[in-house]
Image (cartoon, rainbow, N blue to C red; front, side, top):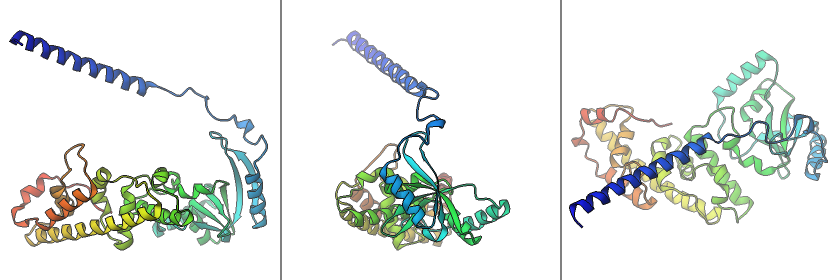
Length: 341
């Protein structure tokens, strides 16, 4: 092919690329501009209490009343149409799900003060009945529950669902206080252990919505062993190397335990490198993030890798980290970075 032919071929390639880009932009614009038609989904307000209530809801109403509570109303969810019982529950019959995050004393104190000042409880908790425990578990409302208890309350109002699986949708439901990485991770690993006990056939993949991110399972196992572990420093890396495991939940938990041991060993090596930097006179709240960034083999945009390969490389690099080659100017170039928990 002559020079003219090559030039024409190059011109065609450029034109094809431009056309492809324009087509991609048009597709993106079409997707972005797609709007939901107003008043096109769900039920009319006047129909929410209409229709025959399913047997599971009737049974739930009977259970609530037998437990000393009161079913104040039954209605269908305005979007999905699922039946829900708005109920008053005896306070001693309500407890948080056993696998959710630890209580924040500061948040409870703040809530207690607000509710006490208003002398009104305006935000019903969400609850499901757990027949085995003979209690009403709340996946969303633990802080409000404790606030009412501190005020000496006798009962609490709740939206009670007949769907027991709702208890495992903590991360999606919780709106009263944002989770940090540690809280999410601990809730997720506790949920996994509970689900493994309930049914041996459960898998991580089947609960992707509830677990949110696969790396949280490994981080949760780390936090169980080391409460002050800096999980948020490693989370961006885990997002690139972790995936939900396909086998039985019990087997997956074993893998998570093994991976947590690897991650904690890496953290030990990183902590040693940070100590060496401090011994050389460097002092910054971002030293750990600096070291992790330096030893991260997949820091390039879009890069991914396999768990064992990436973590092993990072551990070896951390162990061989030469603090003597790092000066203040190298640290300053990083511009700080995200911190721990």
